[in-house]
Image (cartoon, rainbow, N blue to C red; front, side):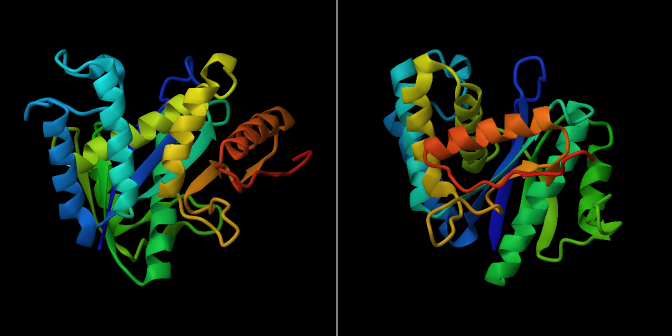
Length: 267
């Protein structure tokens, strides 16, 4: 059994080019050990039981220094990798999505589909735990994801996720795994948004090197499309295609090579 905790970053199109939806999968056989390790890290670094552990430095407890906060985030990612946690993430340009809400709907589907494919490869099963977001239809969305599956796909009206046994809500502070996905996706967000900033290249390289062990890989070491994915499958506008290519090239230079970008010219 695998537990996929999901979240979203880069929701505001005014402050970022790519909306990112992703999740971190934890093998249930390793979940208790990983949770205990994060409990120990919290204690070692001076976190009180009620303190939230998140990526954003401005949201750290006032008793925790920036240096301590930076170190515990590094250790959390390190422990996640040591416990065979896996990253699933999808990128879509805000310029392509009609709205952040549409981007969320599309990329939840993509991440859940890739997770289901991963489970089928392993002949295993999983549960998806979605971080809460503001939507009056949220309970209905979860019911439809389970009972109907994915809808509005290019080649099928409906696709039941046979390997996903349930969809549930999660929130920061309700488990240590919510902290894991917040830190992992926060690191990915920061790195992606700073790829073109010459003054932050050391930080970008450091963050992406920390995330690389969480990605599914091909035999040649490249990142599998199940793990990191550009959405949509084919980009029809040359300007948008170039933005994906630039992101792909930057990620490749920093150790996350292999993500595919496809284009349909003149369509």
